[in-house]
Every structure is written in structure tokens, then in C-alpha cells.
Length: 259
Image 1 (cartoon, rainbow, N blue to C red):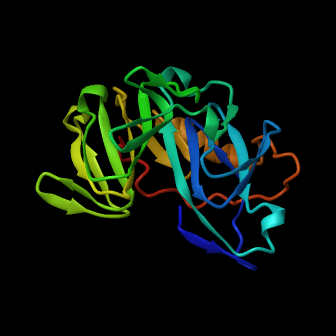
Image 2: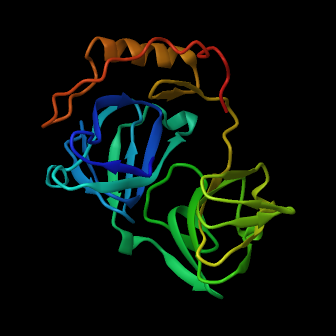
């Protein structure tokens, strides 16, 4: 998300909306978001902290500019990753965890600084309670370096370049580009001083997933039920926020398989 300049009258005001079948991981580089959900949580997300909301069988939440920032022009920039739940946990009870930056594992090796935002890698483990084998790693280089993480990674991975540049397989890549490796064991690249990248990956599920708006499931019928429930106002409400986002028309690609 972003970078976006937030100022009057253009605030971030995402009214209450539903999710099923996934966890959302929100991690900010700049700015702030006030999170409220139907579980009763009201938490300000600040840069470096992790918001991990697991929808399971259904949760409603809103994301808004905090009141104290509505008179201040500021930047909003961050990541929000949607993580599908394993099939046997798609109907689990929803829950929410907020992890502050100092709680996240971090270490340095030869001029490169690492932070494990979620998951597990090389004997480091984040307190974010993930439900499948995965990892989200922040890498910031103080000097030109060769990064060789393949032996510690698993499954598939995507490398997102926030700042700076990365050299891999004879090509140069820059900010806002994503490199995808179907085999994370092949993860090796050169990184320039001042570069920041994020690697997200893990073991893929054996089943296909389908997505319709904010709903994720391993079968289409579950998505249809969730759509009808939201239209009929049967999802739980968000305390302190009476907004409502109408559901968009049916996704014409709903019958297609999604990885």
C-alpha cells in the first residue's frame, strides 16, 4: 500500500468489511492505521509492528486514519499480505494478535541486517502465530553484499524490493519489483548498499484456493455462503464503527482456480 500522502480530506477510511478463510498480515514502513474488529480489538498499527488477524469462519474489521493524524499531512506506506489458511482451519474461530517491533527476532551478518517478521527460518522464530510453514524476512544492507539464503528457505518465495537495487541472474531490479522463485532453495542475489527487500514464502498447499472479494476458500460454495451472509448483514459488527462496505458484483472469474 502506498506510498501515499494522507491529508484532509483524503484520509484512509476503509469501513467495516468481512473476511473468511485467511489471515491478514499488516506491516507499515510509514504512517499509522487504526484497526478495529468484531472481536473488540482497537489497536493503532505503527511502523515496525505486526498486525495478524485471522478471519477463520468470519470476522469484520475497519482500517482508518487515527483521529490525531487527521490534522497532519503524512505518508502511508506498508505491506498487507493475505495468507490462506490450511483447509482444516478454514472454519476456525477468528482471532487477533498484535506484535510490537522489539519482539521480532533481528540479527546482523557482515553488514546486512535481518528482521524476521513472521514464521521461522534458521533457528529464528517470530511470535506471530502462523498456521502453516512460512516466513517474512526484512533485509537491509549497509554495504554491497551477496545474499545466500537458499539453504535456510523452503517452498516458494517472492522477493519484494522496497528501496535500492538487486542483481540476480545477470539482471538488475529496482524498487516496487517482485522476483518469484518456485524453488526458494535457489534464493541467491547481490544487494547494493542502502537496499531494503522483503522475502515472503513458504510451503504451498496441496489444494487450490478460490477468492471472491475479501473471501478465500478451498471450495466455491463457501464463498457463495459468505457473500450471502454479508449482503444480509449476518456478519458480526465492529464495536465503535457502524460503517458498511456493500459487496461488489460477483467476480466473473470466480469459477477459475486460484493458487
